[in-house]
Image (tube, rainbow, N blue to C red; front, side):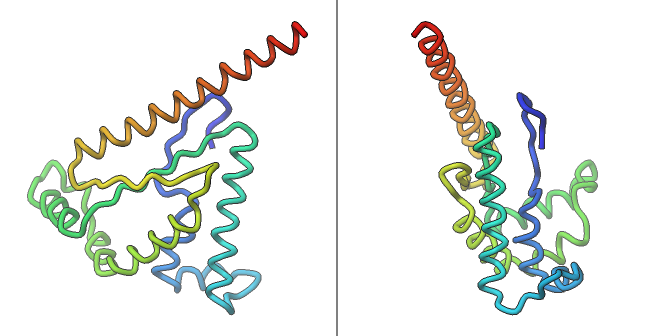
Length: 169
């Protein structure tokens, strides 16, 4: 996490533990958890609660979490993959694991839906942004971030004003 007053951008971060391992349970089994997953429904509920508890704690201590899910369609992902293969300057962006994981498209969609539904809270809401059109997606993300920054500034101004009033009173 970034220090106070700083901005950090995390790509997936702790959400890997409810996305990739949900699609690939063999990874979860390899974690040698203290308590084995007996009841999957309860297990995932606990994992989601851990995330929301962390984000609630961060929020209560002045850190704002802005979660953005760039929702790319399967057709657009295919188009972008082919573009990376065809353009030598973009080959570095593509790996064989991308094709392997693409076979799990439906499982990932189910995992994303469950995750977003379970972890979108007032303290740390999810913003699901259609991402097939890059310019529109980038504009939408910039608007979300601008609104988030403006909200922080407005809150800070209110707190400063309240402090002035309490010092004068």
